[in-house]
Length: 70
Image (cartoon, rainbow, N blue to C red):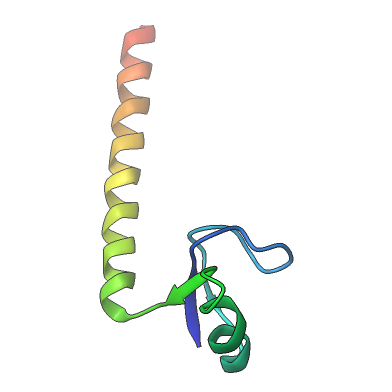
C-alpha cells in the first residue's frame, strides 16, 4: 500500500514522504491516526507538480543570487 505521510512518524518517515507500507499498518494505524493518507494517482501527480514548481523557484533564486554577486 502506498501512503503519503501527513506528519513526521518516528522510525517510519517524515512529513510529505511517499512510502510503501504493509496494508494492515497503513489501514489500521497510520491512516486512522491521521498520520498518513492513501497515495492516489491524482495526489501523486499534484505532489510531482508542486515539487517541479519548487525546484524551478529554487533554481531561479540561485541564479539571481549568482548574478547579484558579480
